[in-house]
Image 1: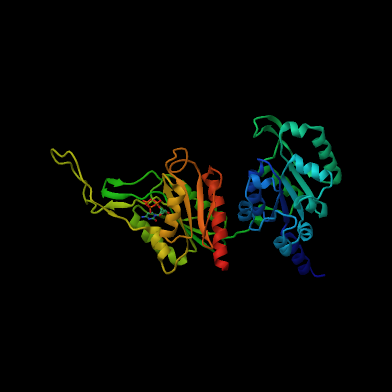
Image 2: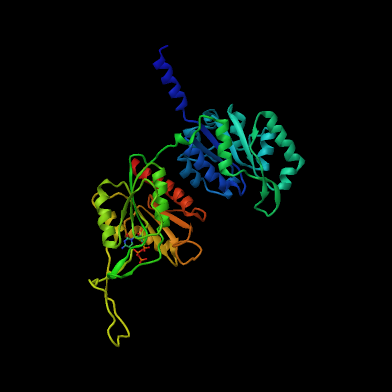
Length: 426
Ligand code: CTP
């Protein structure tokens, strides 16, 4: 065999995508499995999620579908799923099965060799390695029955990752917490060395994302302006998340106090009119446009050239304002219309007003947030939002947990990519 052939074969081996079947059983730790899915996908794995009935009480299949990019399996005898990939095929497909969280119940059922739902059946039918991340109350973990099951599972060749020590959701302290997603991802990587962060898929490679962010400043005179409290943090976090997904990012930012993520094409602007001009200058190359800026709705009709002086005896002043152009609506009506996402900052009836803006501004998706809450939103590091879009005439909603803006931005970008790809395929 020639050297060239050997090299090619080695490359092909290292390029093989690791197929992970991620089982989610019922427990409060299930929400952490969303982050674990994200980390595994990022490390290059093809992830398919199987949820038990109990898991679905804590987190929806839609979340895992968006994060893994694959439909989620929930039933043993679902004719539709069986027609796509039947349970035996799924068991053979997996290079590795990871169950996180693994509840006391699933550990007991696996130890007894039961096959009374999809996940237990897959574990019986597979020849792949099975890793379990136990998560339960400390007393349940210490119970001799659970300990016996853990020993039995280890004897079958299953590997237990954790549990961890610490404070539990119920307030108890002790052994039983699920390991953090980052620690689990590392242990899974050790078990499957061909997983590596450098193999991360880049779903937006070759795509251009343009984001408006921060406030606008509308000049009254050379030293005064009308503006708002927007910090730009949410738009900048979205820019970072889009960069990580492989996009070329144009960040059109009003005056803010934060640094732009390294690698973005920063287009600094002051006023709404400048923001619109900058947006139009890149629209032809833009695939996804996200309007995160808090644009001033009105601007002074005539900004004075010189500093305005008080007149003797003047007790009041009237400013004549005119409406600014609506940037996102202009983009959404453009001939070269990119996939367009807006924000809706509301103080009441948030989702109702946002759904109305989605239609009125002709948007593909809208991210609604409640700006009346002082603990989140405008200047804060955290946010809580609802993402809304239409699917076959029905309004769809995704409501991630309140989180740091960076984490939320990753989640939002994943959902935006999923809907963008869905529309492109049509
Ligand atoms: N927006 C824009 N240009 C404007 C006003 C708003 O591009 N002149 C965009 C924002 O960036 C956001 C969306 O429109 O993506 C909604 O902004 P919001 O301030 O919530 O709504 P308004 O359009 O200002 O409507 P209202 O004042 O009725 O809430």
